[in-house]
Image (cartoon, rainbow, N blue to C red):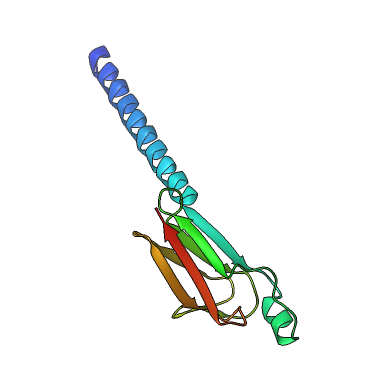
Length: 125
């Protein structure tokens, strides 16, 4: 391989590295934007035990407000040792429920954490 061949090879490797770096940075930016558009609500450890004992559960909102321009994804993470029900979904311990909203509205869901059995999600623009 001559000097020109070595230069071409080095240029090609540099171009591939630059392309790889660019794609990685774009992917990281997309992941960050996805995280920023999510609202994470936790079911605290000990929630089921407190409710079984007749005590109020740790703070868990009865109404969750989302703005499509800021947060359009709701994530409910169950950090308790017992499953919970949100809407038609049963969320096992250590699991999470993710719901993306694409239009405004008021959504009333079943909720096993609240005495009323309801959780309201209000989505605005």
